[in-house]
Amino acid sequence: MIIDCHGHYTTAPKALEDWRNKQIAGIKDPSVMPKASELKISDDELRESIAANQLRLMKERGSDLTLFSPRASFMAHHIGDFNVSSTWAAICNELCYRVGQLFPDNFVPVAMLPQSPGVDPKTCIPELEKCVKEYGNVGINLNPDPSGGHWTSPPLTDRMWYPIYEKMVEYELPAMIHVSTSCNPAFHTTGAHYLNADTTAFMQLIQGDLFKDFPTLKFIIPHGGGAVPYHWGRFRGLAQEMKKPLLKDHLLNNIFFDTCVYHQPGIDLLNTVIPVKNVLFASEMIGAVRGIDPETGNYYDDTKRYIEASKLLSAEEKQQIYEGNARRVFPRLDAQLKAKGH
Image 1 (spheres, helix red, strand yellow):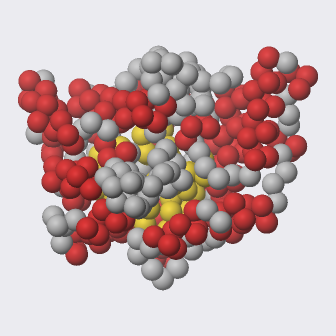
Image 2 (image 1 turned 60 degrees about the horizontal axis):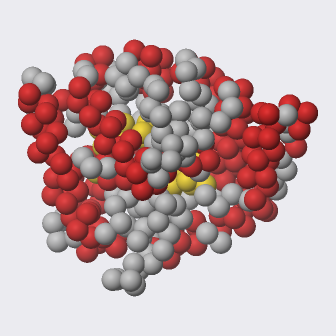
């Protein structure tokens, strides 16, 4: 089985965006604030939005199952207050759950959290628990910067985040560290802010000792880890100067990287530097980079081609990246698959 651990509902029916625009307008003028019940999206509309897009490409490219979360750039935790984020997260998570119900063999939901700048992360726990208990979610997305590019939150090692980590451990949920839209003009959302965040999160985790407190906590750093694999020597050296253990002992029992790297040399570098056990297959298809690479004639985000073309990986190692590692990092997913006889 080929499991894509990084999918977002980027093709949701336009009614979702229209409702969100009304909600944003309602922040300034409460008289136009829409109710959640005013959003009407039928199962047929959901089916059509998936079958013509994600599912079609999954079949063409040869992947089987996608871990599916709300569109990352739409999370926009910096907009409004906690109530705005809470309503928006609930709507988006329900849609991903419904997609999973309509296509149970192809999509499994992962939750966004109703984070809000300066608000205690504890407030996210009711939505997290609902998504696990009612929707069967197998993971969460955690935004280390709800301010949208201004970095007003303490680092991920700060005790402020511990209530989320305690629930992650309790429910065996990994978190993908994933920021949202940048409202800082200095940082392009997908070209700078996302990759900055991946790199920043890794460095924060080097500086702390989070995994001494939570030895089973698991994070996926997306987009191939940002700058991390390319600068592995720098990070090893910094950790050494800080008198931290070797990175393989300090972080690599708890941190994993996905394959959302959109060219062959990048994937080869990732698989040269990072141990195979720490790499999970992903494409983030119909995401940040949707075009065709003129050098290859293939879509940039058709990442399975890069794994298949790798001269570094054995067939067994490829299968680890495609399936084995995801089942180990997402125990709830593994349990769901076993219950279906996979």
